[in-house]
Image (cartoon, rainbow, N blue to C red; front, top):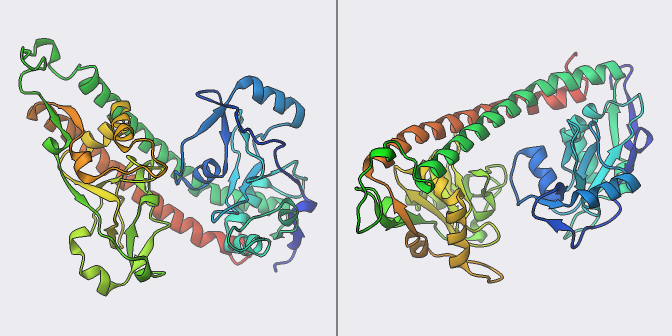
Length: 410
């Protein structure tokens, strides 16, 4: 360890606690964000894994006044399940509360510990090993408050901590800016879709001639998803063939937030994958979940130098109208169509033909091509931004352990 550095325990430099109550029946449609592990993991990693929930402002004020609430500079850490130990740094002042039992709260840091440095340490290989050493349980791993207090970290002088945090934050800031650009592009496409195909204010709508029989503009028709795309269901890769590396297999769990999470996939070897070339994916492919809690969710395949294949219960749209279909399945109407077909079963399912049979208004080829040409380019930009973020993460993660071990001079 470098001169001036020391090994300390987290609990000696901040308070470690949780919230005081589980909100069982307090969810409301809109209000104060209420974070569980899935929301914290989403915010910390950018990987979407669920729909955000809310509590009323009145309820939030009651508990904030009585127990306090996280503020800028605090850290929340997931503490239950296979994603235990993911740390989220609260970087701005805003109101939210969180669920006790699956999140641990670090606050009131002493002057000798920079909380941003601690967050980066917890994300480093050294931090991950320290967290792992404090896990309890076998089938369901968990972190306790007492365990987090005992986590050890290498602590340089406070100025060095701040410099390390500043260097690494530069990468995170660039990543966040790219994510904001991605969100803007996605919102532009969705707003234009709603304007053109829901409110029917498409280019030239003022002078469009209406067809008396269909009630639609000339050249438009009442069709189905099959009118605008072909469809491919995934292959039933056997779990017995899954490996720790090789060719990735995209499963339902990897779909969400308009993209595909490539960080948590199963793998198959080259021999097994080579027999299923039909299911090989490429960047820009639009996928949809066909069963489970994320049924109907769509995601666009990002760029990767690795090979990935389509698994069963995941479908791929074979189409030039990627942007149009992506916006359709993110629209209220598209989401409701999938939910209505899947029904209220404990394990909802939708078949390939049921997806293709979903009814929708199909615009004229000219309007459809105009929308696709414009926003398919937007998808290409999004894929490039995602690729930039991946390179930034790789560079940051290469530098992170070297800074934390004092190998690189600050």
